[in-house]
Length: 71
Image 1 (cartoon, one colour):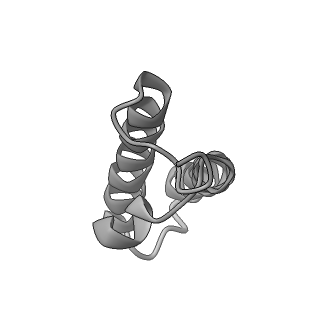
Image 2: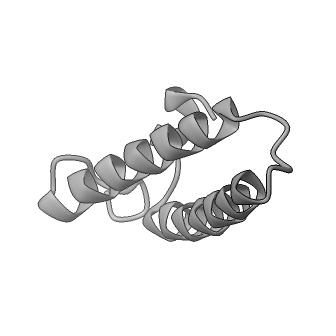
């Protein structure tokens, strides 16, 4: 997902996306352990996206970035 797409998400969407990505990351790690993983770089990109989402969530909580709904 692009950064510009991430910035348009609401708080609920961010939380849901984080949960989805974490479960997908866990699945990829199991595949890696069983040597069934086709694209190992997918883990890196997924971890990066999770970090971006957590940063966005933190900005919302600190008031740096406001929801469109609350503005």
